[in-house]
Image (cartoon, rainbow, N blue to C red):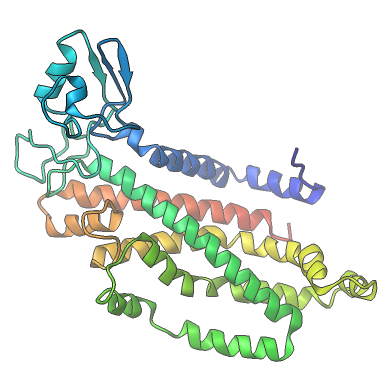
Amino acid sequence: MFKLSPLGRRRFERFKKNRRGWWSLWLFIGLFVISLGGELIANDKPLVVSYQGQWYFPVFKRHTEQEFGGQLPFQADYRSDYVQNLIRKDGGWLLFPPIPFSDDTPNYDLNKPAPSPPTSVNWLGTDDQARDVLARVIFGARVSILFALMLTFVSALIGIAAGALQGYYGGWIDLMGQRLLEVWSGLPVLYLLIILSGFVEPNFWWLLGIMALFSWLALVDVVRAEFLRGRNLEYVKAARALGLTDRKVIFRHILPNAMNATLSYLPFILTGAISTLTALDFLGFGMPAGSASLGELIGQGKQNLQAPWLGLTAFFTLALILSLLVFIGEALRDAFDPRS
């Protein structure tokens, strides 16, 4: 079983005492879990179908209309009255998710033209293509959070490695690394993305790779400073004198202390990644057209000022996610503060 050191326990207790950060962490985890299970909450396919004594799970497996007594060998349209009557005529039944729409499912039964206001069927209304806004928020938030988590992980690996090498070895390695950072950080990331989008159709992995080339710069200076300080400490000099290799000195003695300052930066990198993806989607240089995203919802709100629920939904969703991450980051910063 994993056990924290006495110092780790004290930091964890300090983090818990920050009630705002502690509850923000649990609320963020809850929102993330809900978005991960989006297909079980918002889907145009039923969770369970009972037909002639057999059980079907359309959310996880594709079933044709012929399996329910229909004529077509294609996937059944469970929202149509024809398929529902086929299933229910022999005592069968369907159980739909709380939101019977996926992120790309249009509602053809609107009483008002799209974008339509919130109703008991579409809780947050529909967008200009009659798609359910709440379903698109759930799937869009999942994409944003997954993108930010993966980008933060890749950025942390590259940034920590670069900062550790510069700070530990110093000399020409540090000098050349700093000059490279100065040049690399001066490149206009947004302009590069706009230019490259003219040659390659943007997608999740393409955006992740491009952003990872630049997002690691934020951690280099922090890790470098910790290694410059740590390499001159007495216990590090003693470890060298005992014959420990550079690799063991870095990973055993200096890196754990450098991670204290690094961890408090990670939530802020997350917020920056979510904001960047949202901005790119809003400008039309992010995810492919039609993908559920918060930036695309903001763009729809801008184009449809007569439908304020679009812009307000995107605003409050982003405000909630980013605020939670900022509160978590503040709590981590206080917990790892050496002065406390």
